[in-house]
Length: 476
Image (cartoon, rainbow, N blue to C red):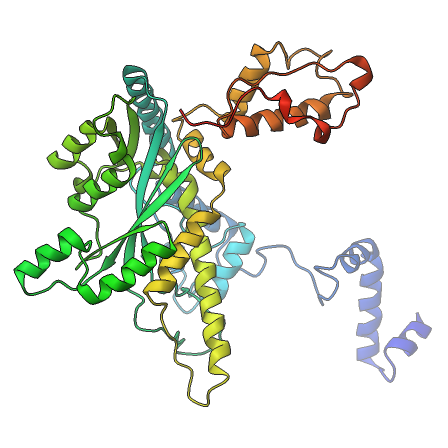
């Protein structure tokens, strides 16, 4: 002990040496605990260790009551902010007889509360009055109604169209900044509130169709010119129409304009005419179009025209689009993510361009050409499988994996038979499953599976000849 004191406590004598002596003896009695703490990266640099909640003003029972209160509110979908949590904590502290000087529910207490009870601030992924159970019930009822419509009209093709706002600027809500700053400034180009409307159409087989875009266009003060613009130039003036025609040549999307950049019944009829007008006057099978319960989708003129082209219009339940609309369930999130990446690329290009100039950086908003390019590129980037999954998750169509298994059963392949699906051929059957699922998604018909001879059992999947598929890719 004396040598230890001389080595680690040089020059210490008297009462201080006695204190060091007692401290070392205390350490020796807790050698296992100290060794374990020193070997853990989370506690190796700590001077001391105390159990969670030791230094808190509110005891664990009081905090547990606050946790139950938070959980109750969140189960009802009520948002709980840091400020609301602090107010509740102060209320509990007051009931315990603590003054505001003893307990302030400071930001550091809130952070510690989050750590102790494994909570965090989360961004919302959905807002509305209905909970998940109500949404699932509405989806099941909606799916049942759609299946009845499909059987009634012998429908084979199912479409979904949905409109969404496209921003000119995708400014983030947060930015990296130095700590302690009173003001956090984010530069914009002055168009953060400007937007256009995009309506996207796809079918249950994964096919995507040209989007319809509605831009803001100034209305002429001359009534005759207004009517001329609507009938011959999609709502645009003579000068702007030249740019729109160029965009029509560059992209398959169709572009319309009005003072609000909002969808209306006139554009709804134009939308149906463009995508389904070729069916008019023909004895074609009915097709089903799902879109939300928006007034411009179901005016008398729109419904009447839909009947002439054998399009059955069905409403998505108005408060349950988040679980009943294929577009909202599967397409929109990757589309918006792609648009945000486009905006970040645009911002980087603007920053790089400003380095070549001595003038202060001035952010430029994307122009009409760039924004239309972004939307078309983002829509093209959505995978076929993503489109199909939207219809599957809304229970509008059967899951593709189930359809594949149905094909196997029709061909005499039983997945429940251990002799058929053993460890030796599991990979082969999985590969065949992937091929058949791809064929189903491409609408290939009359698929015939040929058995290989014994000496060909090791034939690689890539060596399969195209002649094994008796059929051509076709659309009904």
